[in-house]
Image (cartoon, rainbow, N blue to C red):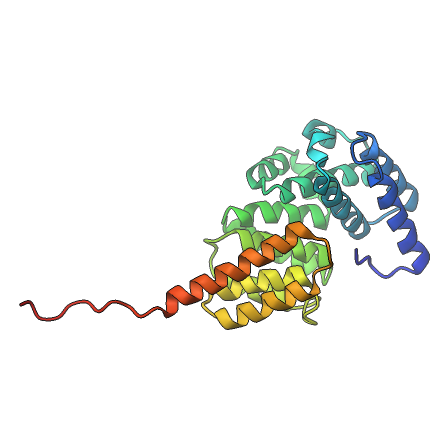
Length: 260
């Protein structure tokens, strides 16, 4: 987890909050414990996004998705404290994203009162944009641009938008947008395996197969050991690029000619 730089003590406190929350992922009270810790720390939306997304992923990885612990009604009625409400929202929407439930995520956000929707933090709006982009809704592109302007180089937010562009296959200039975002800051050092995975998908869609294979090979080299789910995704992308390249390079059957 790459937390914003706010001093080693701050980073350690946030990591400890996440570790406490997910130590017993089957315990239905861990989202509340995490919210209490983030309230005590006065976490901002960036810190909440980092901790909640990683906690939701960790719980899902061991078979205890947040979706089985908190209901949309609980999220919508999380109480007046803004940090608690944001924690529940980040956990729930992140879990929907990890399960590719784009329509459910969209519907949840759109049923919020107009005032609540307008006051959503930047990461929640990024998750809403993911839902729209993932369904190839062009309106998601405008929302994405708004989020990018507000989020700056916040990696977690940009990963959410990359995911939406990667999933939405029918967006206007979707592959070009995906390539630009995956190769720009903060991913321009080429050291983020997930950004490289998204980049490889964009290059495949653009017919730049050899570059795509280079990107996916580097992603495989950079992926932490033991991340089996993501490793399988990368291997599938490698196979897909190779197969698509071979099909495109196969000699075409000649047509036409003179009738005998």
